[in-house]
Image 1: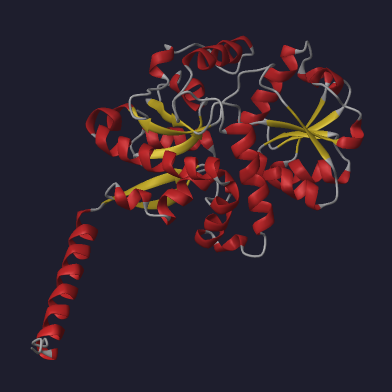
Image 2: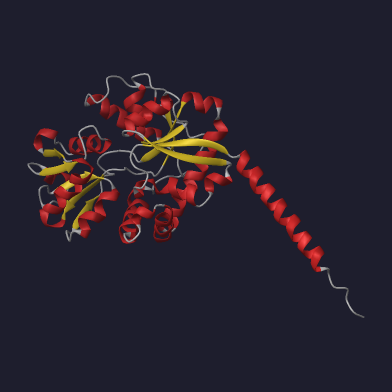
Length: 331
């Protein structure tokens, strides 16, 4: 017996119907995605923002039904104010941000934090002879600015070993100068972030990264949302957090692959993949570990940090710790 062959015309018609149905589903999906803006404190091309870039580039936001656009604020405090005012639903700030702005009536909470360790890294030249933070006395160290969280974290680190800012020559050098000072020998080290370590090494300077966890409980980057958004759109916040933490987990699991993906989504880094791989490995090793629940804020750590900020006059009054964060969206 001969099998009856399908009509080419019928096969083409079936394929056409399938294609139309697929396009219809894709269109419906695109139409149903909620468009939101994620506000960054600095240009989103920095490796520091890999969790968000991977969440967008690898489709994690899309899987949550979100179409995420980017905007850039003027630093973390500005992002906190803009998000608190409702000008963006979510934004990226270091997790101590609410401590600084909540006292002034800015209604913002941290809804996730990218890591259980601090964002600030104390990086010194290997030829500096510095073995511990107390050795910084009388030395020059660079920071990005005197208003930056990394500067506050440096003050906390110094205080923990009995030093004040008067015992060290702290130079505000800007986002490029902060690492260039170390590379050129103008400073023995910097209070910086992992993104700034590869350019020093690329200049041929060997460095030591000094663990600061045992000295001072500074915080990592986080996602901030206003009280109003948390109340009115909790599912939106949950979707953003879940997608972003998926991106963070990718970096933790395989920094090299995450760097390769990051460069695909951020073409400004093409030809400099090595620097991105180094930066993301630093995040995976130095910043992201230390959380029992991925993304969760440690309230005890936050409380200690707020106490220090009050003692140093960085803030004028404390806020209730449970007004500074919520862990309801990381579960």
